[in-house]
Amino acid sequence: MACWKLFSMLMALLLTIAAGLGTTRPVAAATSAHLHFYMHDVTGGPSPTAVRVVNGPRGSFGNTVVIDDELTEGTSQSSATVGRAQGYYMVASMANLELMVNMNVVLTSGPYAGSSLTVVGRDDVSTPVRELSVVGGTGQFRMARGYVLWKTVTPEILDLEIFVNP
Image (cartoon, rainbow, N blue to C red; front, side, top):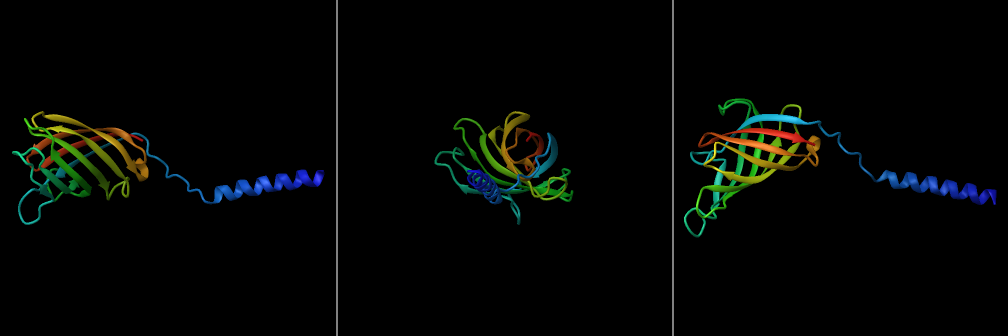
């Protein structure tokens, strides 16, 4: 009887150890963060970073633009690069210039290098400040939630302030 109890305890211990071997340890999540940078949405010239891939059937409704925009610390394109905004936006209103935005903010320098945030939302271009949602992320921003305040500086430069609570 004592041998059976010892055998059962050893088997339970071995099963517990074996079950833990295949698991991964999560990356330590960042605490709340406030990020601020500028997105260069270059639609023309020799090296555009925003390219229309779909022309809508009526006017601009349905136009879809794919982006791989540079994110910098300042408004100048010669400012330090902090990452890329990669995704797309489309004109989602038949009456006004209102966009549906879906993009990943991929950070390549600074304390969050290697992490990303997923941003989704409505961009009513006619309003001075728009709010989009942070719906997830990777690395230090895994499962992040938050919002982006998005302002037009020039037609090709956007001011992004991101508030994140991972």
